[in-house]
Length: 220
Image (cartoon, rainbow, N blue to C red; front, side, top):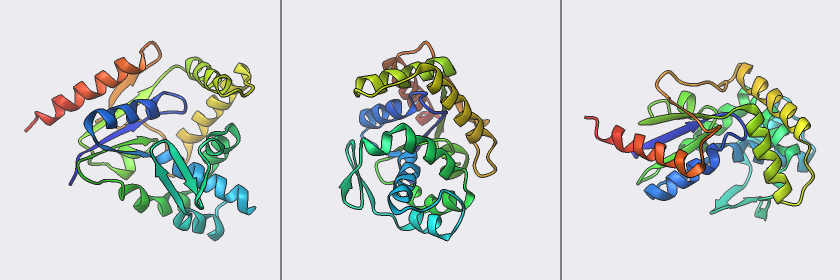
C-alpha cells in the first residue's frame, strides 16, 4: 500500500498548510478531510437539510458531487472555494462531524485518496480512525490564543471583518465539541509525534515533519 502521513490537530493549528507543503515536497497526494465535512455542511445549507442525524444528511455525505483541483473546490460542479471556508460553514462542519453516521458515510471516500506514490492526510481522526496503520502520525497543535490570532489575520487578509474575542470563543467551543464527541473524537494517538507550532514558523514545522518521515522510512 502507498505510504500515508496522517496529520491531525485542532482548528487553525496550521495542519492544512503544513500538510499541503509536505505533500508537495514529497510529490504525494493531499487529503483535506475537513473539506469533505464542510462540503456536507454547505450542501445541507443549499438544500435546506437540517444538521441533525438522519437519512437526508447521510445521503448527502455519501453522494454529494465534490471535487478538488489544486486549491479549487467544486460542489455540484460550482466553485465553492471561498464559500466553504467561511466561519459559518466551519461551525456547521463541526456539528456535522459529530454525527457518527455522517463520519461512517465518508470513510470510504477518504481512504480512496490513498494512491501511489503516497498520501498526506490532515484532519482530526486521520491517525486514529481513517489510516490507523499510517507510517507516520503527527499531532499538530498550537495555543488557542495563537490559533485565534492566525484565524483573525486570515479573515482580515480576505477583506472580511473579524473579532478576536469571538474567534477565540469559537475555537475553544469547537475544541470542546471535537474532543468530547462520541464518534472519532479529536485526540493524540499514542504513536503520534506531538508538534506544537505556537512559536514555530510554517517552514520549520514542514522541515520537522519531513525529517521525521525520513527517519521513519529508514526503520526496517
